[in-house]
Length: 121
Image (cartoon, rainbow, N blue to C red; front, side):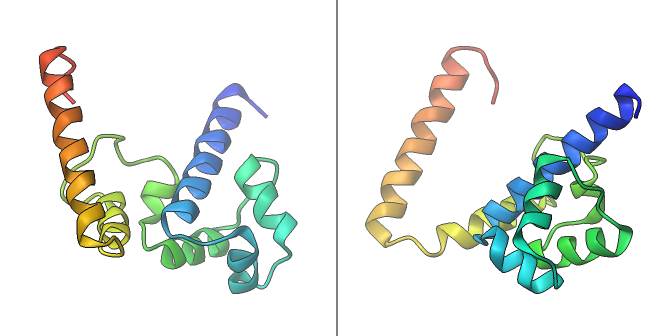
């Protein structure tokens, strides 16, 4: 395996894990949906097991993200079409109103800190 292949496999593994966590699913739940054993999902997320095209398509469907995003072919920067925004919005909708207010204040503080430090977000 070349360095490029290894880096790509690592990127895909990281995206699979991130998408699963954002979807609020356990490895066991995903394995059951795919008809696999849990260690298979663990191996995919560790980059130790190849993911077939069929599995990749099914995972994208389960996690409600694009295959391109799972493959790391989409940019890391957030845009309005980024599936992570939708996943985050789903999680935010589960918060109690007071918790949501606190989180929004925290985000505003983080944004103003970034602007003050010239980080730009």
